Amino acid sequence: KEIIEAPILIIGSGYGGAVSALRLCEAGKKVVMLEMGLNWEKSGIPFSNMLKPGKSAAWLKKKTIAPFMNIFSLAPFTGTLDRMDFENINIWVGRGVGGGSLVNGGMAVTPKESYFKEVFPDLDSEKFYSHYFPLVQKELKVNVIGEQFLKDCPYYKFTRVGEAEAHKAGFKTIRVPNVYDFQYMEKEYRNEVPRSAFNTEVIYGNNHGKNSLDKTYLKKALETGNLEILDLHHVENIKLNGDKTYTLQVRQTDTSGTTVSEKEFNCKKLILAAGTMGTLQLLLHSNAVNHFPVHDQIGKNWGNNGNFMTGRNWVKPLSGGTGSKQSTIPVGGIDNWEDEEHPFFTEIAPLPMGMDVATALYLLINRVDKKGEVYYDPDTKKISLDWNQTNTVKMRENADYFIKKMNRANGGTRSHFLFNNGFGANVCYHPLGGCVLGKATNEYGKLKDHDNLYVLDGSLIPGTIGVNPFVTITAIAEYCIENLIRQNEFV
Ligand code: FDA
Image (cartoon, rainbow, N blue to C red; front, side):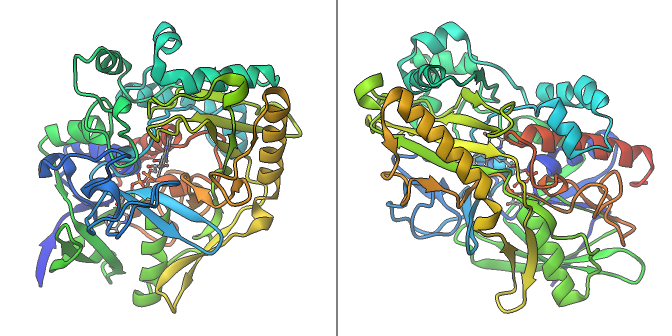
């Protein structure tokens, strides 16, 4: 077995991993990053779009797994989109160098300050809103669509209809910033450059336009010369050694998922940034197989960020339909957060199926009144989730209230076309929590009961943040790594 020594190791190349890598590399540290997914840019393999799913469509599956599109058969490949199925909830995650940034819709939303304070009472919110949030908006290249373009472009009819209907029903709408380059989008509309958002590319990766992490944080980190990214390297488990260093069992695969070599990595400092579910799997599995110490807060305070999908059919008669041409990049949202009885935020989501399906799709983000818990199942050797209908009661009530109010004002029916009973309580894109900042870790993400182990990803956020989470994950990671470096944790 090959044994590799690396002083600082990062597991995972999503938001938390990419921020940590950049700041450590800038501080002159040599960093090795292990990512189970493929380095798409290096591979030269193009991403596929939603209407013709190919290699990038799914992580080692025989058919596609994008919601409402489970119809295409595939040859198993280390694709960008994975789905982890639990008893009452399915969780979608990104795989590949760039993590979730490869597959997500790019919605770059800063949380409401009042809610941020509620979720993180111990953080200096002023510093976050004056420094960390502006910093990550700049690094992630967040921008906003031009209003005139939005008004004129046929690919945004679904947004215009969605907003007009929301106003008619008495809801407030907001413009949603994104990391997709809207200058590029205007050019693609004029056919001056290859199309991506207007060519149904998003959930299996964008070939153009989207500033995913490989174009921002990771690119800058690689330019320092201090970062090495090893893709198709799956960390199986971690062992704590007597001298407080760590040994990782790692399986290198090819793009069919077949093991090509088994490796052992030894490191002095370890950063877990495998995403909420990946980090929890590694910690709890390592505990079961290696007596790896885990604090009793690990797995607690897990939430789905209030994700609740719903939709309406027959939008056509009154509003003239949502359009057969649809951009994949959402730019509109409905903000009902101030309503004390039904607080929620919802994205006016695209449904680019290549025809006018007269259906409006919404991903609601609600409060999470009752948190869940992640635990380890020794039989399957995988994590399980204590999460059921009692956790989503209020989310369902909000979705019901929203759909009824929209239908009363605009016509339409609850979408039985998209969901069995009109609701998708089991759709989760935003798993958060389980290693909560200040509870399972110290104030900067260093895990309790450990001297050299840090968690920097979505698991630090206690199950809810009220908006799409990657801006917050990135800002928290910036805050933590800055302070950890200042405290000389990595000398
Ligand atoms: P992230 O999940 O990004 O990265 C973790 C990485 O670790 C992955 O690349 C994974 O392969 C790797 N890994 C895991 N286990 C490993 C192991 N054992 N060994 C090696 N590598 C391992 N958010 C938002 O703000 N706006 C949006 O528009 C959307 N839209 C959206 C759409 C879809 C379809 C999804 C699935 C998700 C979103 N999100 C989103 C959510 C957002 O993408 C998500 O919250 C972040 O990517 C989470 O960032 P992390 O840094 O926590 O991990």
